[in-house]
Length: 143
Length: 187
Image (cartoon, rainbow over all chains, first blue to last red; front, side):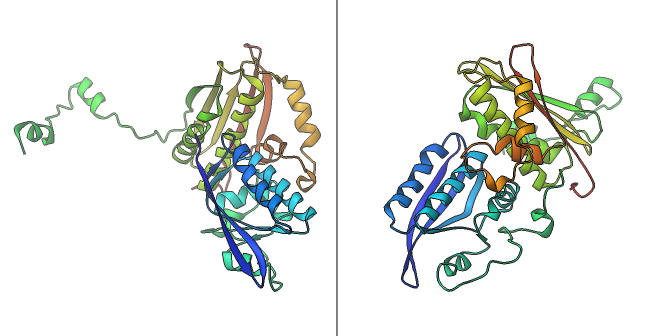
């Protein structure tokens, strides 16, 4: 059975309260339904939910996990909040791209950029790179 | 070192002129580099608990027995995970089995068959699955707002060269995918 740990940290950027949510392990069919509820609870509790999803230690996510990310995005936007992703591994960024999530949710290569995006306007890198990415590893699939 | 350990550490005399000794001692666990297909089947209970094991095995097969890059090993891990999950969720009832078969040809291709028994509560026919894929494969993925519906139509379709379904003899569904090794995808 896959294991995942989700940790929450409060961060303040320019007076704005942000929840840094770090994922470690694997999100799959065995755990995502339960784990997703923790994020919904955070969104529910924050008046203006500003979330950074830190995927540095996330090793695997399935299609349903990605579906939850889009649903969190919708709920956050409906409350005038913001949600970004930071530090995805090469394989995670690859799957986020193939399902088109990177066109909806901004992905930042490093945590500082992700934090800064909630303060002063910081444009994301033109081509988002994954942690440890090499040019070939972030290409669009040929299949 | 005692006498036993000494004996174990000593290389035995090998008479390679003897045909049996020669054949046995030349066997290794190394995967053949020949282009003959290697077929491996795994049968798991209808339970998502076992899927992380299937993912690990997929990585091992693709990385060691095909010649695909690590990127494609990860991609195929997702492909197999999505197909297996569909079989568990829709095709086979709890207590029944799912059969996952890998057919790899070094330097050429990887194929996977995922067979369910058709005993699940939401059984689909091959024709229904083909229609489902056809209907949704050209949908702009950014317009999908549901939590479900990206596995087959986005991940599996985009990361395989062949995706087909057949109604199998057990009354269930067999999903079959093929990914051919192309230039630029090799190690």
